[in-house]
Image (tube, rainbow, N blue to C red):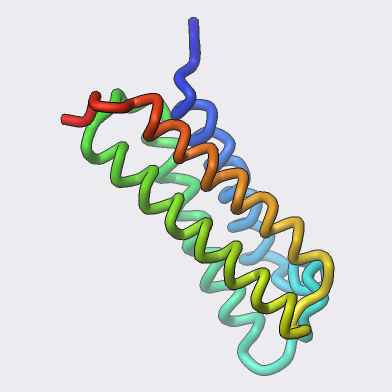
Length: 130
């Protein structure tokens, strides 16, 4: 059984989003420590709300990983790719402004990897959209 590139990238996204969702929901202080961001104000609340979004994305990717090429799968890949590029850019700007520490680069590298991975799935599918 050969796995499609989309299946591999979507499975990885489901796992990473599931882990991040659980982490942000259960112990939001941990990612903040890794990113070297103070847990003041509403930071924990915003982090937990982001965790809920990550958990939802995990379910979406787990459920769609074996979907055949389609307009929906194409939109899912493009949407997550755009989100990852924007998150990576925001991470770099935040780091440059001194709003986070070197730990943010773990997120930035992961986001860029997912953006590239999903871009390759779009290229692989080519004209297979329906």
